[in-house]
Image (cartoon, rainbow, N blue to C red; front, side, top):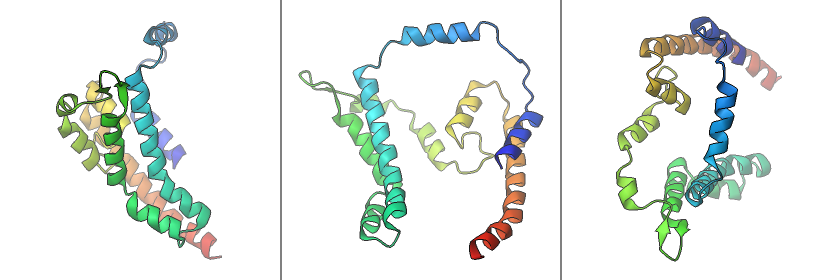
Length: 179
């Protein structure tokens, strides 16, 4: 599937420029000017890592203890995606940037300025053809450099080839599993 995706991407979206002169030096300069992580950036990273850990924890316990185990049942029933997202968001309001001043990573005024329409659009996009179905697609779409027609054309090709590969490979996989 990966080889098919790479082939489709290369055939449908040939790069117009092979190499950008000076790009490596520019990127190195920009990276060095960023400096180290701020306290708020570290807190955001902590909230993200907690979310990822809690999202994979039920699956990991199923692999280790089996999906019939009590620990898996408890974690699976209590750590659904929505609950974990709320926990991670709450951490942003609880992790301090400056405790003596009672400043936290995020406050309600900052949260109210978030473009919730975009957040909901990310959450509601499931198909490969959707321009914002993945963060990478959203960045590309938001740049305005790739027209939506090109994205839909590539997505449609991925969907069709994926469907064909799934239909062809399910009997093979079932044969291997049942053998």
